[in-house]
Length: 427
Image (tube, rainbow, N blue to C red):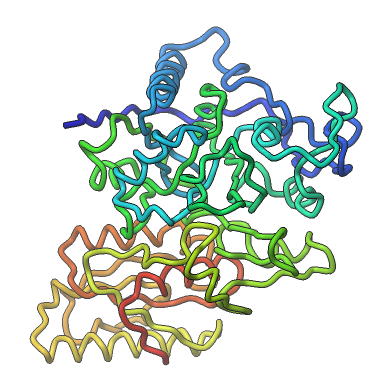
């Protein structure tokens, strides 16, 4: 049996410029216009704690321990700005297989490859036809349509679909000729990848199908004694709270969001040519893609707690729809109580505020978790998985969830909730 150790780390800043919007010149990975701070970044921790403190040394030791485990083919859980990930060497098929075993994940569900520089990315992309490898002549292998998106939103919660080279095992991609790649912004994630000096394949660090983990405790609950090490962000929960946006701009014309996340439709619409971008399941569907997905989060049911999840959807955005939503939830609580369901087994994930004097059906024993205001979807996204797990932990058997408008991060929230829900009530 594997014993799982947890090591806490602080968030130490990387010495990168704040301005991520340096202009891009396609085919020129140099200081002449390419974002060189992303191409070959400084080493992690290099400008922190001079002279080193005890906590600094402990953090570096933890990163080194994790990197040693990953070099030996093990898996390690680590924090990102989205959710906790379960990492293995992306270039080692046997190590990647250990991810699937630990999670109980279907082998045809692709993984995302995480990098710490564009240089690392270019090293795993297939060469261009007729490419001149001599110094000063090498053109970027990254498709030009992605360059403005990378300049604006990397590092960050955005995954892009790219051509797969022979260096990336088919185990990572589910046998596809494309690979999903992300450059995370979380300093612990970037430090770990840079220390390894190879990319990491990493899905969410949970049992397959369960709500994604936003704390080290969630990871431990699901994967203890299955993995050797969890790196914990001691400063708090992830910045985004839902998995990254996945963008396909090479197989899909116009570009398509295959999975919504923290980089929103509205953000991408401002950057992509002519503002053209589609959203899978909202604007189009593809049976072949559904059956053989090129990216995670498409084929299988996800994000599901042990409790039954009932989703309430209402008209978009107004104060009136919020009131209608609350009344519908209260009516469902009353129905459940009339069917002799214990109030302690009923939970509500709230995105609306109750009026003064309003009660939960006929009982104050109903469990509640406040996810934030429906009109502030970034807050709801941060608290979604925490709420699902929190109410499950309180013994809730039926979980009623108030939906949000599908704008900004709300698109990602509703994507996750529809996958988690066993039934939906439209009001």
